[in-house]
Amino acid sequence: MAFTISIGNTTKTFEKRVALLDLLTEEEKEEKTYICAKVNNQVRDLSYEVYYDAEVEFLTVKDHEAMKIYEASLRYVIAMAFHRLYPDLHIRFSYNVSRCISVHLLDPKVTANTAMLLKLTHEVNDIVKADYPLKRFVVPNEEAAEIYKKHGFLDKLEILSYRPEKTVHFYECDDYLNYMYAHLVPSTGYLKDYKIRLYAPGFLIQYPRSECGGEIPPFEDAPTFGRTLKESHDWAKIIGVDTVAHINETIKNRGAVEFINMAEARHSRMLCELGQMIEDGIDDIRLICVAGPSSSGKTTFANRLRIELLSRGINPIRISIDDYYKPKSQVPKDKDGEPDLECLEALDIAEFNDNMLDLINGEEVSLPRFDFEIGRQVPGRTLRLNKEQPIIIEGIHALNDKLTTSIPKSNKFKIFISPQAQINLDDHSPLSLTDLRLLRRLVRDKKFRSAPAEETFGMWPKVRAGEFKWIYATQEGADFVFNSYLPYELPVMKKYAMPLLQAIDKDSPYFTIAERLMRMLKFFIPLEDAWVPSNSLMREFIGGSCYADV
Image (cartoon, rainbow, N blue to C red; front, side, top):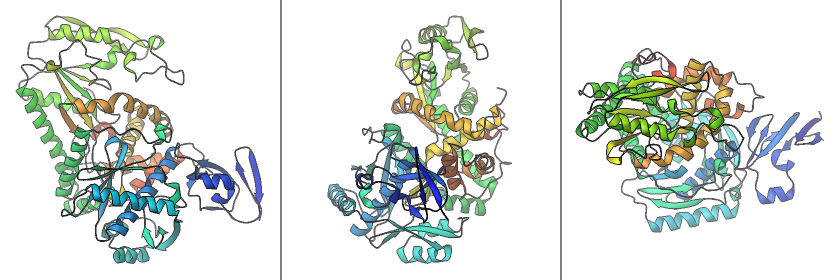
């Protein structure tokens, strides 16, 4: 039966199945620019055969979903190279500093060094140059289990029982087998753009990023971020929640009450440590600055920090940076000609500095309040602070010294907050913490703003652009990093997020994102939230927070 395929303004009729790769010209095949394609808005690898009426859009690494496939394919080739060079050495991938993939050597007796880097780079280059085909095949779960046992993939065997599907899609490449929970490129020759560097105790892999126009971004070390990730992973390993399978086992073996309270105890311990640091320096600390990317839990954290300080006889005042927004007519425009409310210049920096300095000096100050309904400032509170009464400010620019130029550095205590963890489906397949924050925001926006998922998805690229521009560079100057990740949150989030994602129509431009998030959530055992404390950071997103009216 004949069917038509539309690519842009061109439509062709076919009588037999046709692979996506065969829809490209010989020149396009040779250049290997296209990584995958959307077929009727669903992402497919280029080996996929179309046999029905379809609209096809080919994607490059400038597109987010294609970048994800490129990155998964690169992990496959790195794992293949390690298997060839060191067949008895197990490695684990995770996401790390400077938007890189990190490679951890799981044998404590083996150390990454320059000689290993050179061998690895040479082997990867050889695999890419050989342009081996990556052949996809499907087997039942029972057969997949035998393959995992044969190849020593015990980590993949652990998660297999939580897989809702009855089959597994393997890729074979020059007698090497692996499964990356993702589509892959047609052959290894597509993976020409990457960099490998030593980064103790393992390696970092840089790859093209869609938000950088398909280019590899310059490497920027972030030791504070890296240290926080390591601490989080070490803790998760100790209590047995470093993989999805281990999280599920913890839910089954420990139960909801113990698991939830164990995670909350860690937050309480961090708050206690932070409170002690501020108490020890209270003679100098006048401004406590809190910043972090979207959906990090800044509001709940600021409330809990205030309670922690009150318990130590310190009575801080919270002031919202949002009250210093300029009217929209005075806000600089972004590249789309819209007011850029994320930029520093959207705030009245001079007024904010004057008010903070006057408060610190013990003067009475009439603060503004920004009325978002009318879009301008109106009169707010009048305050006078005691000598040992610090100010808590929270917002995207709170750690940016340009916002607080009049305040001496010795008077500022900077706190960076973000969910920072390294969770894996298996050793070769890490989960994205950016996706975790996106899920938090989806659930929160629906719960508190009645915003559909499409609206949140539509805003996310601008939110992310603002984070890269204004937030991430500031974390390295923080006095304290609060890791807001809770190991139980994705199992809790599942029942809230899944209906929102499932409601997105297949014709929606955000369907591919929703599909990716559902693929991540499907492996988690759902966890009821009845035992989540009312002061938990989790309540900021799912509702029921005791701070809702504060």
